[in-house]
Length: 251
Image (cartoon, rainbow, N blue to C red):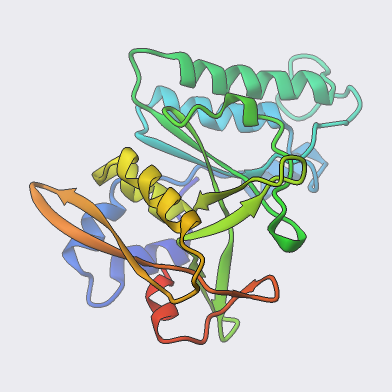
């Protein structure tokens, strides 16, 4: 789909059309389901997952470096067999799930492609991580999990959190889910091993003193220090009213 007006204005004309912002914007593409497409599906609350696979395939075959899949797959598709717009034959939910799974496996197992896929992993109460039916495909090399969580400022501006701590309900083990911007930044300019080391550092540090961490980013031979502050939580939520916490807001 063509970029929406908000995308044009924000990325291309933000703050006197900053040249670096404009350059990066040219490398971003949004593949989306239009309103007309959703009407044709006649199921606005359940997008067929084989159609999501089609979008991933389009980006992958086009040589995308990183594909961010902005959907949460916390449960299997239980829909009955039927025809959606563009279907050659009727498929049920399990068949559509398999088509998406096969596409993700194709991207993951392609030795001639460097395309990475970021899958969203959501969390519920007390940051207990929800299921992801494709979690077994996550290898930390080609397929990654990230958090879609964000916070709002005055209910008008959204900011990404750099990470959240999530706990597995079965094993009770806690781990870090990085946000889309942080994972994209590291996959493009950084070092995955450094990010994994930082994860352990954050998990081992529980004094809630807003310690400052950093990632080394190499952009065109220039080494930059990207700061990340330790998140402080209170009563299961993330504090946003500390001075240091402001640095963790990634717009």
